[in-house]
Structure formats: C-alpha cells, structure tokens
Image (cartoon, rainbow, N blue to C red; front, side, top):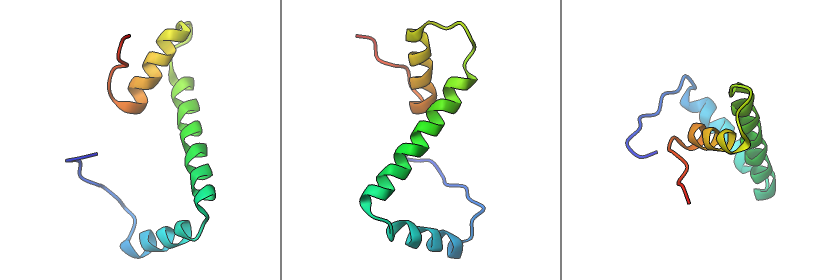
Amino acid sequence: MEGMQTMTDTSPEIAEMVRVRLMALSGAERFRMGAQSFDAARRMVLASLPPGLTETERKRRLFHRLYGEELPTP
C-alpha cells in the first residue's frame, strides 16, 4: 500500500531467514499458503459480522473489510 509505513517487531535477521525459507518452497506451495491465509482471514471477518444480515449485505461488508473501500454498485 503506497505511502504506508511498515511496523514490525521482527529483527532483520529473522525476517531474512523466513524469506529464504518461503522462497525455497515451490510457487505452487507459496500460492497455496497465500490462498489458505486469505480463506482464514475471510472466515474471521465473516464470523465478526452481526447476525441477520442479508447475503448481499454480508458480501458488501466483507469486501469493505478486506479491501478498505465500498463495493462498486452495478
């Protein structure tokens, strides 16, 4: 995200170790990890929404929480 500063409590040495280990995985493995992380985030957001919302409203709120902007209307 452009213009945002990064905050981390991870030392550069540990960050590099993690990067090296991730890059040692195949592209398919890294893709799968990313997809699994996105699915977990999606489930957490959906679980945090109030009950009783319509399916359309759930999708709108999910989009807003994940992407930080309103879902464009058709």
